[in-house]
Length: 98
Image 1 (spheres, rainbow, N blue to C red):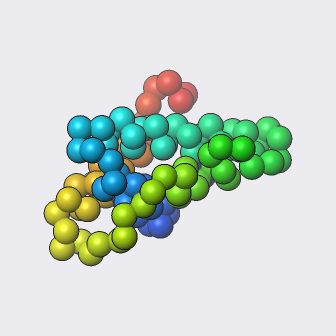
Image 2: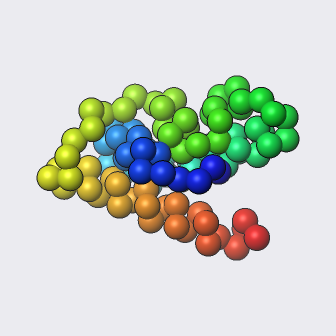
């Protein structure tokens, strides 16, 4: 996966806002996995992944319908944003990636 910037986290959180609450964790991990898969594809072929884009989390998230971006006054958005950060951290430290 490409380096994660604020816009990546925001796009992923906005995708999560559109998803059912009980499926958000699974969707978050899926988007991160898609970004990683796309990044590997780009490195190997020099071409965008046909489904997941350029390897950024934003590209993977934008394959879904995104909610309008709320402010951090919205507790549900904050929970989604936090989930994305947590799952990125877990992905980065996963022994499977070593």
